[in-house]
Amino acid sequence: MLSSLRALMILLLPAALAACDRQSPSGEQAGPSMSQEVPPTSGNAAATEEADGSKDGAFDYRLDRSKAGTAAPGFSFLDPDGGDKRLQDFAGRPMLVNLWATWCAPCVAEMPTLDRIAAAYDSKGLAVLTISQDNQGLKAAKPFFEKHDLPHLKAWADPENQFGFDYATGLLPTTVIYDAQGKEMVRVIGAMDWESADGRALIDAALAS
Image 1: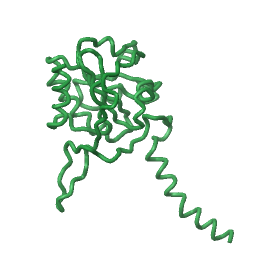
Image 2: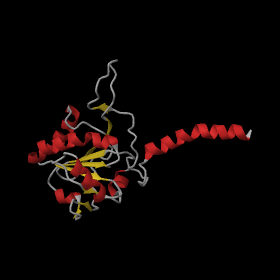
Image 3: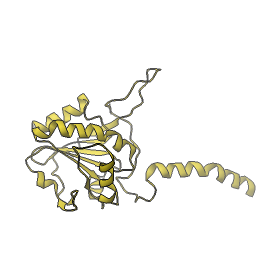
Image 4: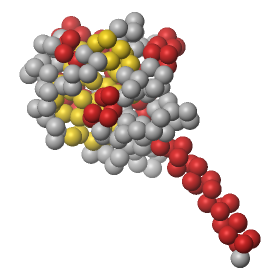
Protein backbone atom coordinates (compact mmCIF):
# COMPACT_ATOMS: atom_id res chain seq x y z
CA MET A 1 0.00 0.00 0.00
CA LEU A 2 2.82 2.38 0.96
CA SER A 3 4.67 1.75 -2.28
CA SER A 4 1.48 2.44 -4.26
CA LEU A 5 0.99 5.80 -2.51
CA ARG A 6 4.60 6.74 -3.15
CA ALA A 7 4.22 5.93 -6.84
CA LEU A 8 1.05 8.03 -7.05
CA MET A 9 2.79 11.02 -5.42
CA ILE A 10 5.68 10.78 -7.89
CA LEU A 11 3.20 10.84 -10.78
CA LEU A 12 1.31 13.86 -9.43
CA LEU A 13 4.31 15.99 -8.40
CA PRO A 14 5.28 17.29 -11.90
CA ALA A 15 1.72 18.46 -12.54
CA ALA A 16 1.60 20.32 -9.23
CA LEU A 17 4.92 22.04 -9.91
CA ALA A 18 3.81 23.05 -13.41
CA ALA A 19 0.66 24.66 -12.03
CA CYS A 20 2.69 26.72 -9.54
CA ASP A 21 4.99 27.86 -12.32
CA ARG A 22 2.03 29.13 -14.37
CA GLN A 23 0.74 31.21 -11.47
CA SER A 24 3.81 33.22 -10.48
CA PRO A 25 7.45 33.60 -11.53
CA SER A 26 10.29 32.18 -9.50
CA GLY A 27 11.22 34.58 -6.72
CA GLU A 28 8.24 36.90 -7.30
CA GLN A 29 5.46 37.59 -4.86
CA ALA A 30 2.06 36.09 -5.46
CA GLY A 31 -0.83 38.51 -5.65
CA PRO A 32 -3.94 39.45 -7.58
CA SER A 33 -1.92 40.84 -10.48
CA MET A 34 0.55 38.00 -10.76
CA SER A 35 -1.10 35.27 -12.83
CA GLN A 36 0.11 34.81 -16.39
CA GLU A 37 -3.04 32.87 -17.28
CA VAL A 38 -5.27 34.56 -19.84
CA PRO A 39 -9.00 33.81 -19.39
CA PRO A 40 -11.33 32.71 -22.17
CA THR A 41 -11.35 35.51 -24.69
CA SER A 42 -14.21 37.65 -25.86
CA GLY A 43 -11.98 39.21 -28.47
CA ASN A 44 -9.09 38.02 -30.59
CA ALA A 45 -7.04 40.95 -31.74
CA ALA A 46 -4.42 39.45 -33.98
CA ALA A 47 -4.31 35.69 -33.78
CA THR A 48 -2.40 34.07 -36.62
CA GLU A 49 -4.05 31.39 -38.72
CA GLU A 50 -2.68 27.87 -38.61
CA ALA A 51 -2.60 25.42 -41.51
CA ASP A 52 -5.80 23.75 -40.30
CA GLY A 53 -7.63 27.08 -40.23
CA SER A 54 -7.54 27.45 -36.44
CA LYS A 55 -6.13 30.50 -34.67
CA ASP A 56 -3.32 30.46 -32.16
CA GLY A 57 -4.84 33.17 -29.94
CA ALA A 58 -1.58 35.12 -29.59
CA PHE A 59 -3.53 38.16 -28.38
CA ASP A 60 -6.32 36.95 -26.12
CA TYR A 61 -8.30 39.39 -24.06
CA ARG A 62 -11.70 40.29 -22.68
CA LEU A 63 -13.27 43.69 -22.12
CA ASP A 64 -14.71 44.78 -18.78
CA ARG A 65 -16.83 47.95 -18.61
CA SER A 66 -18.27 47.25 -15.15
CA LYS A 67 -16.08 49.95 -13.54
CA ALA A 68 -16.78 52.61 -16.17
CA GLY A 69 -17.04 56.07 -14.63
CA THR A 70 -14.74 55.25 -11.70
CA ALA A 71 -12.11 57.90 -10.97
CA ALA A 72 -8.46 56.99 -11.49
CA PRO A 73 -6.73 55.91 -8.24
CA GLY A 74 -4.65 58.58 -6.53
CA PHE A 75 -1.69 56.64 -5.17
CA SER A 76 1.84 57.28 -6.42
CA PHE A 77 4.14 55.22 -8.61
CA LEU A 78 7.75 55.67 -9.72
CA ASP A 79 8.92 57.56 -12.79
CA PRO A 80 12.09 56.33 -14.57
CA ASP A 81 14.24 58.59 -12.37
CA GLY A 82 12.74 57.26 -9.15
CA GLY A 83 10.47 60.25 -8.51
CA ASP A 84 6.83 60.03 -7.53
CA LYS A 85 4.07 60.34 -10.12
CA ARG A 86 0.29 60.06 -9.97
CA LEU A 87 -2.23 59.56 -12.72
CA GLN A 88 -3.60 62.97 -11.79
CA ASP A 89 -0.35 64.46 -13.12
CA PHE A 90 -1.68 63.64 -16.59
CA ALA A 91 -4.97 65.47 -16.07
CA GLY A 92 -6.65 66.65 -19.23
CA ARG A 93 -5.24 63.80 -21.32
CA PRO A 94 -6.81 60.42 -22.06
CA MET A 95 -4.65 57.69 -20.53
CA LEU A 96 -3.85 54.11 -21.43
CA VAL A 97 -2.52 52.52 -18.23
CA ASN A 98 -0.90 49.15 -18.87
CA LEU A 99 0.07 46.85 -15.99
CA TRP A 100 2.77 44.40 -16.96
CA ALA A 101 5.84 42.55 -15.66
CA THR A 102 9.14 41.52 -17.21
CA TRP A 103 8.45 37.83 -16.56
CA CYS A 104 4.99 37.91 -18.20
CA ALA A 105 5.21 36.60 -21.78
CA PRO A 106 1.85 38.02 -22.99
CA CYS A 107 2.86 41.42 -21.56
CA VAL A 108 6.13 41.40 -23.48
CA ALA A 109 4.34 40.27 -26.65
CA GLU A 110 2.05 43.32 -26.71
CA MET A 111 4.79 45.85 -25.86
CA PRO A 112 5.80 46.61 -29.48
CA THR A 113 2.19 47.43 -30.36
CA LEU A 114 1.97 49.75 -27.33
CA ASP A 115 5.18 51.45 -28.39
CA ARG A 116 3.86 52.14 -31.89
CA ILE A 117 0.55 53.38 -30.47
CA ALA A 118 2.44 55.73 -28.14
CA ALA A 119 4.31 57.12 -31.14
CA ALA A 120 1.19 57.50 -33.29
CA TYR A 121 -1.07 59.05 -30.66
CA ASP A 122 1.23 61.20 -28.53
CA SER A 123 0.58 64.26 -30.69
CA LYS A 124 -3.15 63.65 -30.25
CA GLY A 125 -2.82 63.81 -26.48
CA LEU A 126 -2.86 60.14 -25.43
CA ALA A 127 -0.64 59.25 -22.46
CA VAL A 128 0.58 55.63 -22.62
CA LEU A 129 1.82 54.51 -19.19
CA THR A 130 3.39 51.07 -18.97
CA ILE A 131 3.60 50.51 -15.21
CA SER A 132 5.71 47.54 -14.15
CA GLN A 133 4.37 45.29 -11.40
CA ASP A 134 7.78 43.66 -10.80
CA ASN A 135 8.55 43.79 -7.10
CA GLN A 136 12.12 44.84 -7.99
CA GLY A 137 10.65 48.05 -9.36
CA LEU A 138 12.95 50.10 -11.57
CA LYS A 139 15.75 47.57 -11.11
CA ALA A 140 13.72 45.24 -13.32
CA ALA A 141 11.88 47.72 -15.55
CA LYS A 142 14.76 49.96 -16.62
CA PRO A 143 17.05 47.17 -17.90
CA PHE A 144 14.10 45.77 -19.85
CA PHE A 145 13.65 49.01 -21.77
CA GLU A 146 17.41 49.37 -22.25
CA LYS A 147 17.48 45.92 -23.82
CA HIS A 148 14.41 46.25 -26.04
CA ASP A 149 13.77 48.74 -28.82
CA LEU A 150 10.76 50.54 -27.33
CA PRO A 151 11.73 54.21 -27.61
CA HIS A 152 8.25 55.64 -27.06
CA LEU A 153 7.56 53.87 -23.76
CA LYS A 154 8.97 54.63 -20.32
CA ALA A 155 9.95 52.50 -17.34
CA TRP A 156 7.26 53.42 -14.84
CA ALA A 157 7.17 51.12 -11.82
CA ASP A 158 4.79 50.12 -9.03
CA PRO A 159 6.86 47.73 -6.89
CA GLU A 160 4.19 47.52 -4.19
CA ASN A 161 1.58 46.44 -6.76
CA GLN A 162 -0.85 49.13 -5.67
CA PHE A 163 -2.41 49.22 -9.14
CA GLY A 164 -2.60 45.44 -9.34
CA PHE A 165 -4.40 45.15 -6.03
CA ASP A 166 -6.69 48.11 -6.79
CA TYR A 167 -7.75 46.82 -10.22
CA ALA A 168 -7.93 43.26 -8.83
CA THR A 169 -8.32 41.52 -12.19
CA GLY A 170 -5.98 38.72 -11.11
CA LEU A 171 -4.19 38.84 -14.47
CA LEU A 172 -1.33 40.44 -16.34
CA PRO A 173 -1.38 42.23 -18.62
CA THR A 174 -4.29 44.43 -17.62
CA THR A 175 -4.87 47.75 -19.35
CA VAL A 176 -7.27 50.46 -18.20
CA ILE A 177 -8.29 53.31 -20.49
CA TYR A 178 -9.30 56.63 -18.92
CA ASP A 179 -11.00 59.56 -20.59
CA ALA A 180 -9.65 63.11 -20.48
CA GLN A 181 -11.50 63.70 -17.18
CA GLY A 182 -9.69 60.81 -15.49
CA LYS A 183 -12.72 58.52 -15.49
CA GLU A 184 -12.37 54.86 -16.37
CA MET A 185 -13.87 53.81 -19.69
CA VAL A 186 -12.88 50.16 -20.16
CA ARG A 187 -10.50 47.49 -18.94
CA VAL A 188 -8.71 45.15 -21.32
CA ILE A 189 -7.81 41.99 -19.41
CA GLY A 190 -5.21 40.02 -21.31
CA ALA A 191 -2.95 40.89 -24.22
CA MET A 192 -4.27 42.99 -27.11
CA ASP A 193 -2.80 44.04 -30.43
CA TRP A 194 -3.28 47.77 -29.93
CA GLU A 195 -2.87 48.43 -33.64
CA SER A 196 -5.88 46.26 -34.45
CA ALA A 197 -9.25 47.74 -35.33
CA ASP A 198 -10.55 46.87 -31.86
CA GLY A 199 -7.58 48.48 -30.12
CA ARG A 200 -7.72 51.67 -32.13
CA ALA A 201 -11.49 51.94 -31.60
CA LEU A 202 -10.98 51.93 -27.82
CA ILE A 203 -8.28 54.59 -28.09
CA ASP A 204 -10.30 56.76 -30.48
CA ALA A 205 -13.24 56.66 -28.07
CA ALA A 206 -10.97 57.94 -25.29
CA LEU A 207 -9.61 60.71 -27.51
CA ALA A 208 -13.15 61.79 -28.34
CA SER A 209 -14.06 62.09 -24.64
